[in-house]
Length: 315
Ligand SMILES: [Zn+2]
Image (cartoon, rainbow, N blue to C red; front, side, top):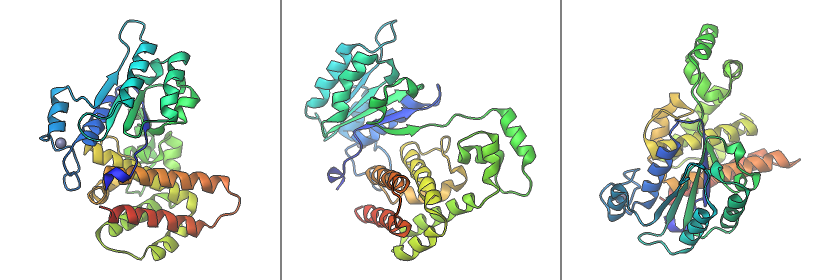
């Protein structure tokens, strides 16, 4: 079933230095290349032919490029080699993974050379572009990638300041920083509204849907009352967490760090492809909701839930 669902062909992973972009990409590569049925295990098996080749460091369907000399720039010949590589059929499974690190080590000419591959990607290929400074990448490259940003940690002073402002809340300063994705004031503002409780409702409902068949029309009606923008924004953050959990099994990069147990239950019912497709679908619906003047919020929420439900049933 996985074969009929296309993953995005290019993912731009960005975040501050030392946050583990390469570890994330490599872990994803191993899992995507693994030949075992991962629905029950949620991770690369470590014992199939593909995993053994990966562990030995010579998997023929994994290709990494990085600057080769002190210029710290990727050479056009390296990009041409990469393009030639992705047009070949995969050697073992049905997928080829390429890791470009750092992607911002491309000048205009090398970026242009890569662009065509991003515009018309060979169906089996999946490229991970890693960057600590994604703004250095041409917009033409960025816009053709699914972007996943890893949030930086906050300073102790930020956390102390926020903690001193918190009274009568179950949320710690650390958790609020994660959830807000912004500075101390934005983190503080989160506890003033009902945003955080909305998010809990979403996760609980998704968890329910993962263990039994639910009345999605009723759930959609409940969600509608929370506001479409809230829902789609939180859903994207929730799905990113699910993807992170699927790939890493650790909480260090989670946004909804306080809901880890519930998220883990949902992860167990979905495969990685479904999660990425759900993320893309919610993103698309969010963009539509921002660009359309008149739209039916209930029908957008229903579409998102039906899409989610179908991806679960396919498992
Ligand atoms: Zn394996």
